[in-house]
Image (spheres, rainbow, N blue to C red):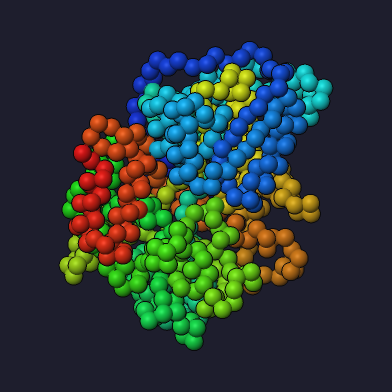
Length: 542
């Protein structure tokens, strides 16, 4: 395990250099900020925190808030879920104009880019690099007598997560990494196991119990072979154990953007240019249209859904790409209506997302409308998940305690605890190597390294382990799976350039939305690929 862990830390330290390009200017500009206080205020301070978490994640967040409030009894944190990211962003944007924004909030880089343009969000560098030390003098505090500081050891953070957060004008940290994630692929292992002989005959390595490789991603040629084996285009067939579709992508926006990177087609850049009007993008969209037409790829719009995880559980599709943070939505169980589950309750495994090549700048051939086209490909997987920032309208005391709360949420133990319970990924390197067991339930504690080992042991045993039914490792098996898969594709994470709308083009948030619509229009036959791309251009440029 130590050898595996050493490799993991090495990759996490270097992958930003090999897998991402630092974007935005790094030339610092003059910026007015609130002066950090020299003392720890003892008056009552109320912090409002907006997020998008559902009941399960909110319960864990509230537990962490209670721990923080015990450290600082004069501080009250009110957390509110805004249900989804679009609602969160639009509510904040409306609030900026009337001075009604929270103290702090989650957000994606393109959200913060808009807030920065509006002058509404606080640069955090003064806290990050501060040498101020505060003594906790409140006798009611759980850390009474201790000293605290806002200083962050940036070398302990995953570098590409930092790069994503200081890509803005001036190179300032207007946000910091918090709930980071990527996409992985859930697969119906019961269907795979039923077709082991055929899959091996197609030249694809698979274990006796239906496990495909967790280290090497499937390529699209292999997906075509699996489609012929695992799909009945007339509908899911419980007798032959075949699904109606092979592969769902929850996020059509991510599919467009990530495949653009894999094809080295243009998308956007840090200067706000819209780069989609090129032959490579046109060929990519025509290629995807073929995959839509032959049931290799499906989008949730096929079922009038926002996500395809329920239809994965229903057996409509055999594989589904989605966020690591949504891992548990892909696991069938008895709470679903039996009549809806066409293949019953099945076994689930997780894989890397499909790729076209095995190394960057490697040529592959794609069949585009009946013609073989040579494409210079790259490896790419989405780096996503919200960051966290503080709004400039907050008072000095609110900003100080809000930053201390960010530091608390992202410390070694809490980022590991958050990751193991939610499917998000640790933002600190020390979380991977810490030997401190974390109490996940009243009867179960584990280090993050041993948490990763849960899935590794399961895969090594080809799914046949001798754990007792009451062994709590079962409760964390799927989260451990996606955490391992996320690590295995770490070296080719990519993140989006973030920019606000300009005088002649839309901002990055709008570009992502329109990228998703483009594929949905093609899938539903509202537009041809050429028409869909033209419509997208018209929405993004003027």
